[in-house]
Length: 357
Image (cartoon, rainbow, N blue to C red; front, side, top):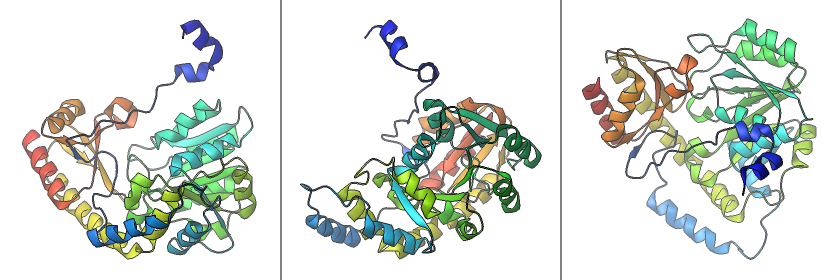
C-alpha cells in the first residue's frame, strides 16, 4: 500500500504513534513482565484439564460470564450493590472506558504511570494530560488539583500501587482527587494482591469512583482477564460497547476453576512478598544504585555510578531479562525494574547484579 493511501486513511494521531513493543523473552530468566513465577500444582492442573472436557467449543460462551462474575465478586469481596464488567485484560477495560467518551475529551494521569492510559487515549483521538510525580514518586497534590481544575478531565487514571514505580500513593490525596473531580476516577489495582491496600471499600462513598483489577499479576497472565467494578448505572453504560462474547469459554472455565482454588494463589502471593523482602534487602546493600520502596511484585532502582543501558545489557548477556525504563527519560532516567521471580531466579539476578556493579 502506498504511503499516500496510508496518510489519507489513517488519522494523524495514529501515524505519529509508536506501537507497544514486547521484548522476546525466549531462553531468558524472565523478570521483566510482573508475572507470578509459579504455575499451579500438577494435581490441580490435572483437575483443570478434566474440567475443560465439558466446554462446548461449538457453542458461544456465556455472554455475561455469570459463574465467573460471581466468583470474582466473592474472592475480591465486592459488595453486592456494585456490578462488575469483565474484559480481555485490563487493556480492554481501559479501551472501553475511553471509547465511551465524546471526541476531544480530556484524560489525566500522573507521570510516570501505566503506559496504556496514554497509548489508548491517543489512539482514540482524546486529549491526554499528565502531571509529573515528585522526585520520590509521590503525587504532586497541588499540581494535580490545578490540572483537574484546568482540564476538567472526563477520566483520571491512578494506578495503586503505581506502575512502574511500585509505590502506593497517599490515600487521602487520592480521595481529594475523587472529591474534586467532575468526571470518573479509575483506581487501577493491578498489583493489589501484593499491596494489602484497596479502594474497594470506598466505592460506597463516591459515585464517580471505579476500581479496576486483573488476574494477570495474581498468576493467570495467560488468560488475559481484567475487570472493573462500580455503580451499576455506570457499568451498564460501559457494557453497551463491550463486544459480545469478549470472554471466551476456555478463559471463563479456567478462571472460574482457578479462583475456586484461591488459597493456592494466596500462598504464592505470600511467597512472592517474602522474596520481595529478600531482594529489597540485598539490593539496598549494593553500592551504585538507589532502590525505591515497593508495594508491588517488582522493584524499581536507579543506577548512580553507571548508566542503566549497559547494566541492562550485561544482565541480558547473562541470560536475565529485566525492564529498562531509562529510554522513557524524565524521572525514569537510568531506572531499571525487576520482577520478583522464584527464589532461584532472584538469587541468580542478585549474583549477577553484584558482579556487574
